[in-house]
Image 1 (tube, rainbow, N blue to C red):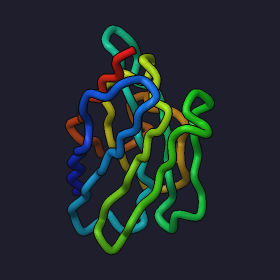
Image 2 (spheres, rainbow, N blue to C red):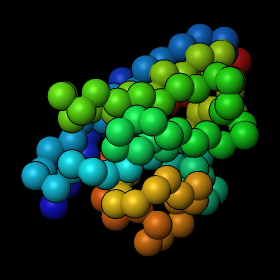
Image 3 (tube, one colour):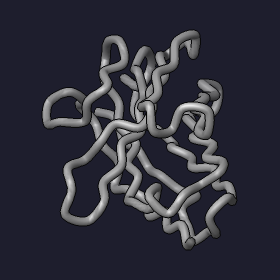
Length: 125
């Protein structure tokens, strides 16, 4: 099993920055691709970014490209999502998720195997 715990969410003004962290535990975390998904009230969960175990491959949704950066430190079992130039439409609950295999640009059920509880990001305009 893999346990994922997000942190770093909060309230920020439009144009500001936040860094989310995803701390993982569990002996099978090694080798897993980690992603971030987000969900706004009344909407489907949507893909944000993902990174492979080695960190050599990253994928981003078009609506965050150039503003968000995903990275990981495997010595700390932690994945980060640096969010810059935040917009009001980035307001959502952000979830860390993991799977074996390459990144998948979808957060529908079954694509990722493990999920955190989420952290709220609110961007005021």
